[in-house]
Image (cartoon, rainbow, N blue to C red):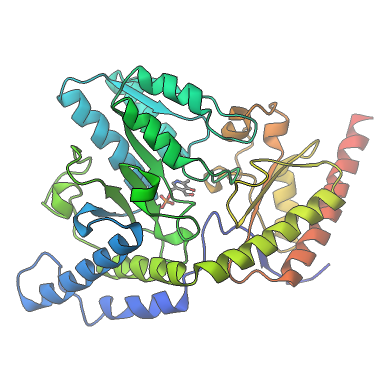
Length: 392
Ligand code: PLP
């Protein structure tokens, strides 16, 4: 079966850097090497590039340039939003409560857990339905009890489910709460207009939309009181100390601009490829159940529970045959523990060990999908047979 073939269906974990992004970044590894904070002309050239990037990004998010904080990744953006809002609220003597969902990325859950365990914050986790949609009535009840911040993921990395952020923002604000969203998976695909979404903070990471790894941003609504979680110099309006990574910031802005300009075509392609995958898998694998929302899901994202199949064993089979997939969050690859997200939406422990995520990208072709479907069918059949034989 397809010796030497490679089919990458893990774009939710990371995307290749667009050659146009690499080209935009190149001058900032060489000729423009000044520190953007330096006052001489070497610094000014780099500073101009950082500020141009800020303008580009702010235009796409429909916010002011001073509301953009450049960070080193999506994880850092989530950490800054949660710690910063929580510490500020504590400093002002406001209720030490945080509201979140059971389907957040570990960048959010681990940070909130730490605030809970080390700093005595109370955490309320608002239940979601089987598709991973936050229950807006229960969210309202949680916000009514007050607190520093609610953090709700825009689009789930594991389920693909998209939340109704305009509604959730409205609810949070009606009860005097701030809303942060981890939009890392939404970046490059969904509407990022912060006015329309109504959010107070929004995290992005460039490597999910054909930009470089190791750079992200946090939108912070003007006037919001946020304590920096990384202290030092006065970079990024005092919210994120550390010399700017000029090349990566330029690359992120270019990648977001390309995603924005090419959005219609990309989404059409992603949806077509994703739907071929979903249709093919449900047709050919009797053990497969679509996980996440059937309609309100990321255009690039297909996820399943494969009843009776060990997802980690399946990943190894797929990899040997050249198909790159994921059993859930990339950070959990090789981890035999059940997926917290699948448990969070009500699947059993066994089902939560059988998650499969396939995510398509700009380079995914029909031929790729057809090969992946063949490989999946053969591998799932083999594993199912093995399991039945062992049970005898
Ligand atoms: N949030 C979500 C939803 C993600 O999918 C990821 C990465 O997989 C992150 C945060 C972390 O982003 P980064 O890899 O830039 O730290």
